[in-house]
Length: 466
Image (tube, rainbow, N blue to C red; front, side, top):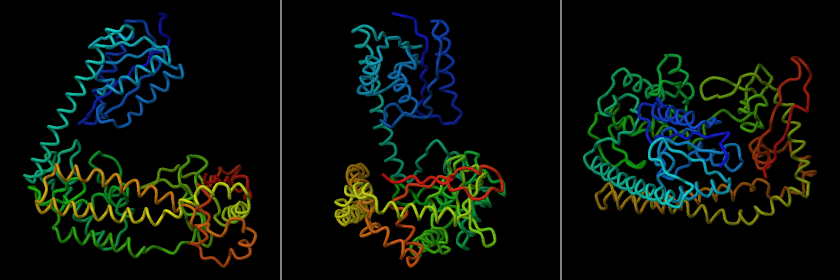
């Protein structure tokens, strides 16, 4: 066999408790030493940190390595040990198939060496994979049983990251963070938004548990978490009281939930003034553009700061873009291509009511199941077995419902773009937005060609839904 010219090094650990990546770093060091000893040039290192090889979840770097093998970008693989590569027999067979398709036979392990080029070597690998799978399954059963015992005793589920406001034991209150949490609840109940609270935490230089900045989704997650009222949660359901002391009372927690429900049901927000809200993208960084007013001028702009991942380097006048997009939308309504595209959706629209019924039914079943567990009528194992198919049915129905209702905003409009153009101004802004949203995936705004130049229509690119 010829000597490899582009070797792949693959490293993986299942749990990185400290978040330092030291496990994969040690594997990489040993694998690179072996590559140097063999005289194999290393083309790329693929690392999946804190990702299990038994759970079946996607390992992005592992999948990329397989793709690069198929494309001929790497022609050898070095792994620390066979169980770092996979702990699932099916996945091992898929790896072997990928090697066969790429005609690659150079595979080496730092520890637990096995030969992919012989039948006996493959037999050893398959036996090791089966043993690793059995060990992982046994460990999984022990962990689940331990979790059931902890739940019965009111003990918290201890993940790798401590909760904000508590010490690493997940029970002892960390008073400085607890005071911040109580203040957070007070300000939220007083009417502050998630985003303003995130900005406040950043301005006070309060770090998250992982040491990063705050986002409104992080703030919301803290506010709705029942553990801060001393309540025990299993699989997103409150199942009783925990053994730890809450930072706020149960009444305060209920007030927070009521406030969130009030905001959701009332839909209270400033009236929409921007036709393309949520649809514009920055041509520099790909980030979402946000609406902004400067005096009487409305604009879409790329932003930095809490909740924003943009570059902050692009703005465009809203009215000019909106007029251009509306003109293209009305023209597209009369194209035969659109009629063909929507023909496949028409049958789905008729099913929307049925999928909605399934969603309602599954939601009620999950609530009844949680109540039965809370009242001690069923054990946690029975709860989990019963919950799984209901959750799967609910998720499928939600996906189908979303797909089925994509084109309802266009009923009666396809082929009537010319007529709609005359009455477009009579539609309210929400109706106009829904029509555009049904046709347009996003609108990309390119950067200015030169500062202070007139509006250039070529900066606007409409990306249609398919």
